[in-house]
Image (cartoon, rainbow, N blue to C red; front, side, top):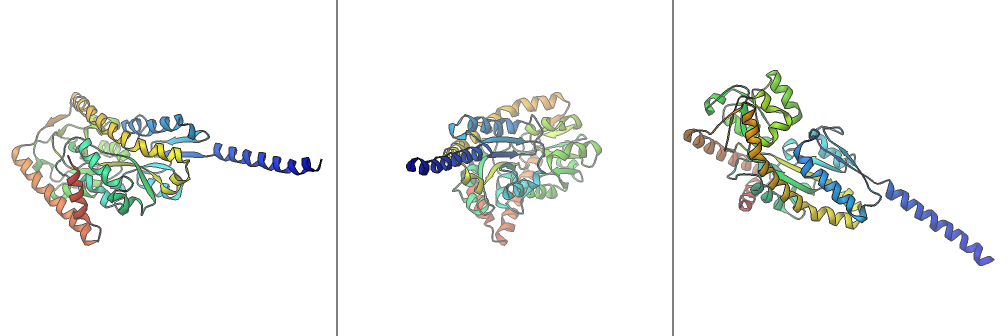
Length: 340
């Protein structure tokens, strides 16, 4: 009888601990946030496949996933801070919107010599993934870990009114995102206007801006083609880096199997997404044309001018960071070496 009395509290305590552990597992919620409108192509290629793969992992039992698109949990520029503070667990973070915190991570947005999406995406991924040079210099100091990334195809100039030469773009108010494209527009004697993507349609419709620097893939999700008349094609006015990050603290709190799953799917989703974006671009170009936007290749003279201005932008961007002790030239050279 005495033995039974001694065993009873132990059994009750064990049951209580198991119940608490079960309740704790059930209460773990992974909050995912971005600024993209519902139906945007990038969450389809990254966020939704990630959630489905994690749900299929036996180690994810008890985890709940909450996805908040369209800036429901915060503006695009605030998503890094919200991830650092723990309000969000996984978030879309664009270096171009937080260049004060991640200046080197804008390197892939420079108007360098590349085409498509996969060439710059994989060069950037190798620098920014855990263990890479950019990870050590910017992601780790900000307390976050890169999960997936994509560098969009080169941006084009698209405007509300017709134009055929770079000279005609002078004085136009053109929406830009990030310091690299802002600098290039200034050299083109246009007026860069920095604003988050969700604000572009209204600004364009009101005439607050005259045009945009956008890739063809992103015109349609924001209905920009409905307000535009002309655009370039086959040029590189810079581009845009879209990252998905998780706070390092949150990552380390996850079960090892989930950590491994996130790590293994990182490069897989990054590769598959850039290939899909490249495939989509051809169809998007035709849709933009069908909407009435005239896309015109630049003249040889304008191409030469753009090339000269682009080289100036790259040099000035790198030297400005060098002067701040941020290894700009080293980062440009490393990124260039990865383009293949």
